[in-house]
Length: 295
Image (cartoon, rainbow, N blue to C red):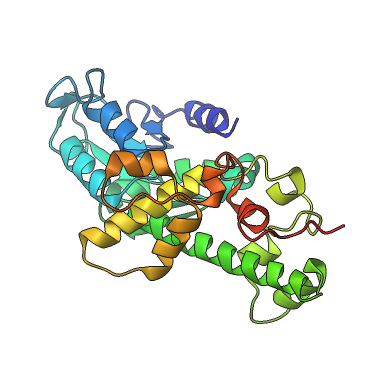
């Protein structure tokens, strides 16, 4: 549904109009994907966008997949090394922007997503109206791959925050404090965060969030696991220790992804192992911490 909305919005623009997007004489290509393997195949595969060699018609390619920054940078370099079939103005070569989004399904449906964009600043400024047509915020993060890096860091912080809130709420329940009471305290004190006041993981505390729908219709645990794995792999590539990332991996581990990447030990944990990989990642409150619904 969200994907259809994006495509409809992009195709609704008249990119040939010089009053709207002067650099574009053909529609920019946008895509979303769930893994770097799919992304590489889209660009470099047998039927990929770059299969025609050095000549490319689109001036701008926008990729909103959540992948590792190294892959984004490689693809960006490949795109920039191509030659435009129809050159005009300052567009001597095509550009790719890595522009993952944050906000989840709810923000996608409401049109309030945040775009984190890496790549040419000139291309970003030209594409900014497209982002603002689909979302509420757009933030330029710097060179190629920086949008992807920002998304992994954002989701890492989101995962750790959700674990902390879920752990505290389940502990409070065990100590005799209701989740509603603790949530009121969190949201009026120093523990306040997105996981407590906008995406509460306890069923019965907040309406309109995945926990109120038996953890359906949100950001799947397997996708969070994938992003944590990408963050861990990126940290390993540059020699950084990220202990909270490793712990979050253990809780939300995605074994099939790990078995393909083979860069760190495979761990089986409750959320994905017990068949909850398609539920929202806030389900960690129920399935890992054994938290109770608020009656």
